[in-house]
Image (cartoon, helix red, strand yellow):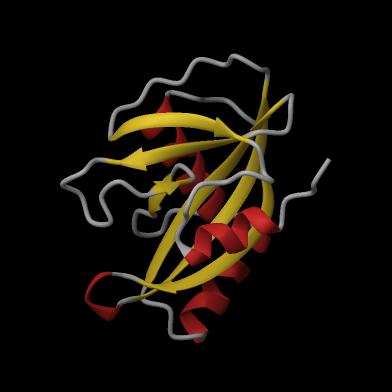
Length: 144
């Protein structure tokens, strides 16, 4: 694991974080962000979010974010830049931290959903309702 990412995990554990996640704010050339919508029957069903999910044991945050992005959208091989880590309380009161990265794709990049029921490219100044931690992450992106 890269030293920077090992430190992120070490700090999260020192802060009492129980669950680690990775996510990617994918931007297109026009500056819109890719959002995916949870299936209606899922936890927080119908909510829009950035692609991401739980890290595997001993998985580096960047690798986990890339894996989740590929699994959920089919987008692979993108260089990921670290953006921000946001804390939240998950199911059953579990303290969680999502390590967020950014990547850029050309306009019209194909998205193949496997776990969500819809996707959209949203302008940063016209985002739908998001979880507070996803809003915190996206607020860190530079505005055009």
